[in-house]
Amino acid sequence: MSVQKYLATGSLGENIQEPVSWCQKEAARLEKHQARFPAIVAAAEMAEDKLRIPWQNLDVLTEYHATLDNQLYKP
Image (cartoon, rainbow, N blue to C red; front, side):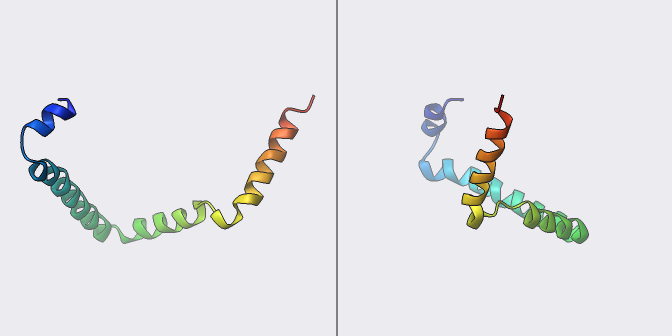
């Protein structure tokens, strides 16, 4: 269904309420899963912290990337 047809099927409030309620249901479902598996949640949070991009060091990462590119393309 196109966006125009979807918006023509009801008011804007009705069209927005459906995705909002779906998101709320998914969030509640996720919270239930998190409560059932606290060890997995803790491991995921730890992995997220380890894999997070260090934005405060972005200039260093950019310089490192440029150095790697230069070494890769050297004859």
